[in-house]
Length: 171
Image: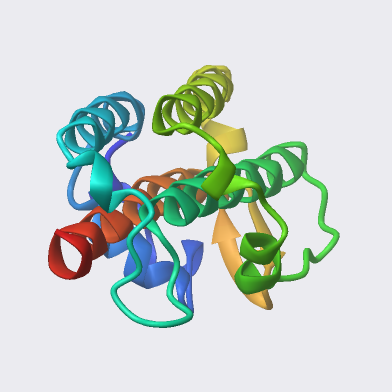
């Protein structure tokens, strides 16, 4: 399944930004490739940067990695619900509230990357298990329509977005 196969009614609103950010890639392959590329990228960041904030009130690199983990879990939960043809609209979440209630700063970078890897591997197995019908299932999240397969590309695009933020604002 390639992102070019998505049709316009499969995602809307803020989700479109992340689908575009994922690029024209194969979903299953890129879920794996992007994880390895991100881990390699983070492992090359100087140690003194992980707790750095480029401005008052901004998240650290550790905070952002925890945010990526939390957000991927939420997107995957939505994909699970929609793949099981649950039509219950799902609410948005307040990312700043989540970030304020983690212990990212007290964790090692390796611990955060290990957790991200575990979450991604779980989601990779989940996406591999889905039928074409399940991948095309559409539900409502954050008052926007989105398909299960589009959520997979959102997971990829969200991670790529934050990697660009690291490059532009932290390094």
